Length: 280
Length: 133
Image 1 (tube, rainbow over the protein chains, first blue to last red):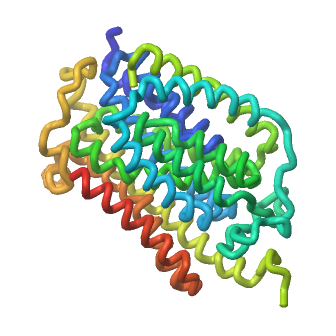
Image 2 (image 1 turned 180 degrees about the horizontal axis):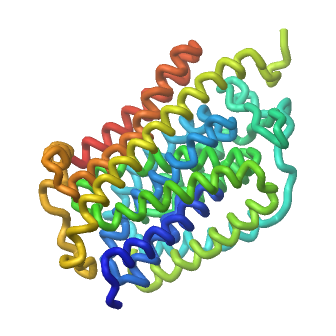
């Protein structure tokens, strides 16, 4: 393909707007759009794609976070508490990478995601009653409120230990595979801890930014973050994620669940394909 | 004695003030990032037509773009790519700053459990950041 730099940047910018939009709505970060666009469409080396994807995740997280924090969707206590599990898991995962075969794990993880995509698409009660929370959740002040039609509604928090364990696993997987931790984070908060879906996705949105920033130093030092690729991507992702953050408040949780399930389904296929062809 | 799970509305209000502050801080960081990246793009684009980079092969970034001092040094001499990379540094700094400010937010709320937890996150964050450099 013979494009000049302006056309190339314009295409990347458009893809990045979509990535930021989907990433901020689903709490997944948008790497799922950017990595295939760079590697499959433009034949960019995977290392540049990973570096750019990392930038995508941080930009999605920061672009949407301002709105999510101000409106009171994301739960900072749950985010901080679970971030400890994720970060320790990521260190373990990076260590295990030398022992286990990442390709095999990618296929298993992909199959687990297919099942999760189905489970997430099914309707359920949007929030657990505030007074039904686990005692440990109450002691850690995890239950909070979130806006529903302009009103702050209290919600309960369940299965703190299971959520913490799943987050640790999410960290291990992201350390092993490089991507996919956003999906596990949303699923752990949604399925195990029974948080409202918008709280799960926006809290994941906060956490993925911190997790990505932790590995940014390594990628920058290895020379994976290219300024010419990053330039249109950052601008596009920030624009897309701000639009996504505006839309989230007005969307029905049911719609968000369906969008999330579709993106998770595609992520599962990408994982299985990459694992089966040895591209991890 | 209140019900254990009862919601404390005064505490929630105080917390919302902090959330507004953190929200504004994030917005300032994002605007600063956009400004720096746009400035870099304005410097870079006019020079770029003749030299389209090849990304099919990985050749790593030049040493100057792989360290904080190298990037900042280049950015101040007006090197277009270094200016864009300085924008990336600002972007990477944003979540770290948010965690750091949260430490003070929890201190202000006298919620010492979360002061400790947030310090742990900040510690792990800095450990893996500096461990890579």
